[in-house]
Image (cartoon, rainbow, N blue to C red; front, side, top):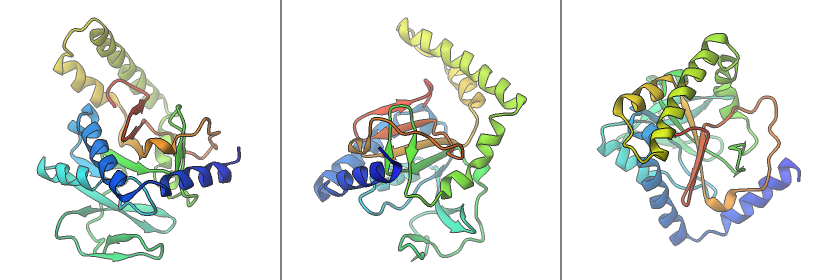
Amino acid sequence: MSIDKLRHLARTRRELITVAAQKVAAQQLADRIVGSPIYQHSRHIAVYWAVGGEISVEPLIERAWQAGKQCYLPVVRHQSLIFVPYDQNTLMHKNRFGIPEPVNCENAFAAAELDLVLTPLVAFDQECHRIGMGGGYYDRTFAFLQAQSNTREMKQKKEAGDVLLALASQEAVQKKPLQKENVQKALKEIPKPFLMGVAHSCQQVDMIKPESWDVSLNSIYTDLKKIAVGQFS
């Protein structure tokens, strides 16, 4: 099935979700993400303003604020995104797409300095491949992650992280408590920002063929399940 047909299929499914079901799904998503080690060890978190039936992250944002974490909203600038601090007092206006975004962008935060990026999507598959709205904003903004993944330093860092992840997985299989130092080391070795796709479970499709410019997601969280590359996701 073509990308356009998959996008149409997933959007149709998403638009059929009732308002009541949307609220329940948003709470379930927040519960699932809050329990993840990546979230728990993240300080700077990029969120988004849900539109067009996207799963809401408002309950998660509220809990992040309560935990003392800093949230950021994306703002479109020159075909890519910048991330602006967002709290209860942030002045908002609608951009050319009708999506609310912060008015003041002077204190934008560098994308490379974010710990966790909650990435909206239209469709996804079991391999963490993503179809977005088609604008390519997230792919262009985080293209540096693709370039970094090809460097020797990043490969060595990923290999070290994989070893620690394997160790933690073995401990889990043996029903031993995960050692805090192992968790912290593994999290430190995972390249950041960590890209976490978020969606309704009904947006999953059988298979998506990624393009060369698509930036890989580390995991995908829905209201019902998690699809992850590694243990600490």
